[in-house]
Amino acid sequence: MMKKIIRKAVTLLSVYYAEMVEYRAELILWVLTGSLPIIMMGVWTEAAEGGQFGLSSLEFARYFLAVFLVRQLTVVWVIWDFEKEVVEGKLSPRLLQPLDPVWHHVSSHLSERIARTPFAIFLIVLFFALYPQAFWIPSFTQLILFFIAAAMAFALRFMIQYTFAMFAFWTERAYALHDFWFLFYLFLSGTIAPLEVFPEPVRQIVLLTPFPYFIDFPVSILVGLPTDIPRGFLSTLGWFLICLGINRILWRQGLKKYSGMGA
Image (cartoon, rainbow, N blue to C red):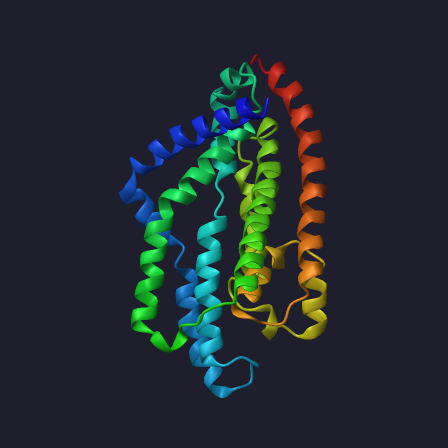
C-alpha cells in the first residue's frame, strides 16, 4: 500500500516538475514578483536610523531577506487553478480518478517550489555579495525549526486559499474573496513590517489570527527575534485543522452543486 502511494506521489511530482521547467522565463518573473520584501527592506533600514523602532538597520535587512525566502517557499495560487477547473468543467474528469483532485494541486505547488529554488538562491547570494555585513549563519536548531515552520506556513496558506476556492462552486469570482483577505495578509503577516514594531496591544490581537504564522513566525525563528515557538506551532496547527474542517464541508456541499450544474 505504501509503495503504491509513494509511486503515485513520485509520478505526480515528476509530471508537474517537467511542466514547470518548460517555463523557466516565467519562473524567473514569478521569483522577481516576490521582491516586495527587498523594497520594504530599503524603507525600514532607512527608518531604523532614528532608532525608534527597536531594531537596527542590520536586523531589518536580515528580517526582510528572510521574508523574501519565506515568500518563495510559501507562495500559493491554487484558487485560480481550481476556479478555472470548476468554471470550465475541467474538474469533471479529475473526479473520475481514484485520487482527490487536491493532490494534483499539491504536487504542482511542490514541483514549482523545487524548480524556482535555484533562482531564489541566486538572488540571496547576490544580496549577500552586495550587502556582506548582513550575512549571518543561523544555528542548526534554528534552521530545523525554520523549515518546519515554513512548511507549516505553506500548508496553512494552501488550505486557507483552497477553502476560499470552494466558493467557485457558487460564484465565478471566488478569487475576489481571496483578494480581500490578501490585504490583511500583507499588513498583518509581517510582510510590510515586523510584528516587533507593532504596539504591544495590537500585536497581541494580531497573534490571535492566522496571519503572523505565514511570515513573521518562521522569519523570527531564522533571524533570532523573540518569539513564542510552542505557541507558534500550536497556533499554525490549530488554524490548519479549523480550515481543513471547513474545507471538507464546503467540498461535499460544493460537489452537490457542481453535479446539479450538469457535471
